[in-house]
Image (tube, rainbow, N blue to C red; front, side, top):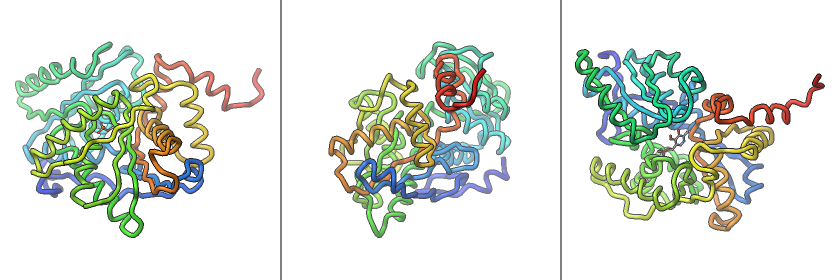
Length: 348
Ligand SMILES: Cc1ncc(COP(=O)(O)O)c(C=O)c1O
């Protein structure tokens, strides 16, 4: 643990453990931009680390910084079966010789474990399954685990589902500084990103204010209707204000036109679109977050809310690592049909 503590630096006075390759690229996607009628750039947070943990690493740097500075040795968290956050926590816990206890909820049976949950297990995290449970139910389970860890003489650190409490969202203030430098000579008009807990959007909005950047921040909801999603941003913003003393005095813009069936829901058309974007433009989006952010952006371009010719950054927050698991999970049975569409070999 001491070797880890020695690596901690600070961001805005908060301990931060540097883990990611920053700044991530701002890559121009000329042909896809032409399709949408805008000058399009992809903010490549999917390249934040070599393991594909994406934007979660931004939050993790601050979360692990806080944990390390408090001398804790055990991470306790929760997420859905496909949680990118739980996968990232397990991987970095193993690398930093910390213990990880993870509560996973949602449909499915432990014997069907796959994708991100399987990766977390391979990295040695202790997994607890809560079939047919949700976000709120698992908080009590996390607290019980913390008690058990304390009784065993360990020092637990609780990480909120979505890694969206405390200083973690300051990771997205850092992203605002990157974007502001990367677009210093030709400012962006809009930054578009996927919204789940609203932490990333709140951090980015605070960063926009602190850097004096001109761009608008548009969240595309993956989980809630716009009003609930905005309230989530406001709650995250209050925490950031309490920590930093800086407030966000503007309304949050959340677009909820790309929710489709709700959080984690997607259909054959989503998979076809992922395939077309991969084939035509060489980008791989996951169906839960970045594809929805892209679909939301396309809707806003079509309606004129994002005017023609705007310079737009779409955040690729990662998440494609979940694709394999999502396709194989019992709840999703498009895989066979998709494979038949894609593989046009001579069948028996
Ligand atoms: C890949 C990916 N993108 C975007 C988000 C949304 O970020 P936030 O919860 O801060 O709104 C998440 C959160 O789980 C995520 O895993």
